[in-house]
Length: 115
Length: 114
Image (cartoon, helix red, strand yellow):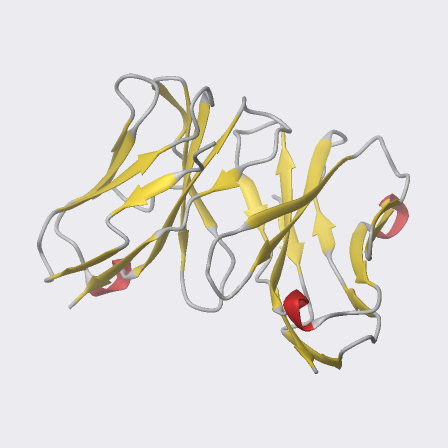
């Protein structure tokens, strides 16, 4: 069975601080995809990144970076120099290609960035 | 271009009633997904369509839930004999194809069963 765990329910930081959101996943499949989505207060989920299981290179996009470590089954997300507009709920998700086409989401981490 | 749209944005119904929720995917997207999101939780997969057919309906909680996509575009999620536990935000997403393509989500329909 597949599972995604986001152990941090809520995180509160002050603007300009760096913050890391943790994601740990479980799957026995060797081919899988990992995603991060942002859900701002407006409610609409916004895609941030996709990573496949064969590509462990870390990625940086502006103030966002992602650290994928297969050895620890983790796909962590770091926001550098956080801004108030980063306040949202962030979801990590896992999709495998066997046994259906489910995308399994974690419970989310609510990030508060205070001015 | 237009994103995924869902109607209605809010639906209030009474226990035992029938409801239909509509999803208009992004034009050209062959894959369509329905999710349910309860307060404080991540989206929970319900069903996946590839074209007109339901490729994976393993997430539908019981036979009161049914979804169709007759022409491979618009989809309707149908819930019979609604129960209070069905109250949630129902999200629709579409992607260019299945597999690893990113999903684009609609704003959701908030269903409240009284």
